[in-house]
Amino acid sequence: MGIKTQVDPQKALAKTLRQAAKQVSDLTIPLTLISQQWFKSNRAIFTLKSHGAYVDLSPLYKKWKAAKLGSPYPILKLTGKLEDSITDPTSPFAVSYILSKTDLFVGSKVGYAGVHHKGSRKRGIPIRPVVLFGNEQVAPGALKNRIKTWEKIVMKYVADVSGATGAPTPEAI
Image (tube, rainbow, N blue to C red; front, side, top):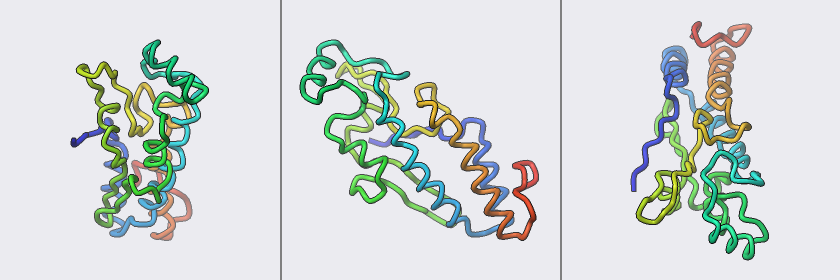
């Protein structure tokens, strides 16, 4: 099941990457840093002690999960497989590829991640996005500034490589 996630609805990161690639042809280093930061900060999803901004679990499933695990939360955690896939880049189910010197692809290979991400009326599962970039309404507060942080990583790298004295603004790149 292919899932398309809009990472950058205002296209700010895409613009920064395009402009940076004009000045520095190989963005492997900042893309690697962005990937590392993505996996590390995803841990915020699994520290939630409530349903957060996600639609809560059904009462029956909540009761079952609490009995099985001691708590129904975090909402996307049952076995830990999904959590590992988006918090541990060494997980066999983690996705982190630098496709070219300017393109990064991150995500999860866990099959049921797509069901949670898109929801399923047939199965009674509401939309609970798994791959978050910070612009989603359900994203925990710790993830709200991801795009801006990633822009800063790219801009600092361009400044360092080009010999600029300070990190440029997105407009200057």
